[in-house]
Length: 389
Image (cartoon, rainbow, N blue to C red; front, side, top):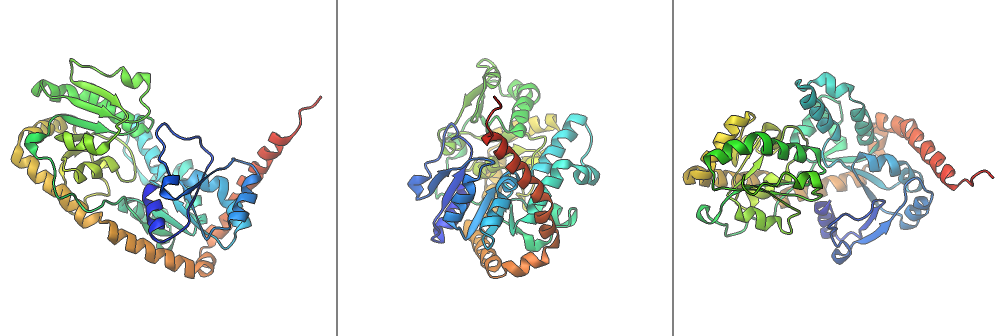
């Protein structure tokens, strides 16, 4: 979301950030960036007055559930407004993969096609004028499995600024690191995987080395994993991700399920920290390029590779260079910004034509959205009704 705000600011746009949620533990000061912040209410007609007065040229919905709540209201009161869905990642893909891990079964097209969440998420994609997709893997999945037209999709990954001219050398770095907020199920699962399976094998071979666990929303059950003697240190929220990655020698990310792109791995590469991850973790990042560390799904082999990467300076430096190469060739900020700007201009100039071609989207706006609309109206009426005496 911060990346999108930066994109629009660079185009000279006036940005209003409307949110129904309460602020998080460590909110970004958007107003300091010149963004107007507005609190909105779910299932309430006050949003209708707000959006009519604002009369925006574009609205970006943060994930499908926001489009479900507010998309029909925007379409009703600002019909010429471009509606863009920021998927963040495909929630249905992550949910199906999580269930597959629980059931110990492989991912299949049948499971993806039969998933109820997929139907909701795909409906949002079809209803929107453009959907931003963060991973090339998910672009291919949407087009080839779900039959979404490429005209409705824009590949816009996480990007990085120009690499720094200096990075901390191997000799100055020490210990392992994992970073990621703990209320995100793939992260919590990965921390448990580290605690009970992977870290004991690494710590046995590197007894003087520590694993530092960082992440927001560290609950009591998270902090209970802290073990000084075992070198498993839970720190909670990191004030500076840059400082965390620059001091660590190796980043560990043994993800068993998930979707989208893993920002922690791009950040690790950016700050010159090689990593070990799973196939899921590396998905959509490397293309045909060598990985910036090791990709391994067998946790015993993962642990052995972690020890080797930590101790072998030559191996480590090559992994670091591979990471830089991936960022330069696949996640250059200006390259993706230019593509995004071009797509926005095309959508703006062809909005009526594109909507007429998108028959499924039009049908869903009439049928599926009607269900959300009247449910919202029922809730609003219920909330405003006076109790019986």
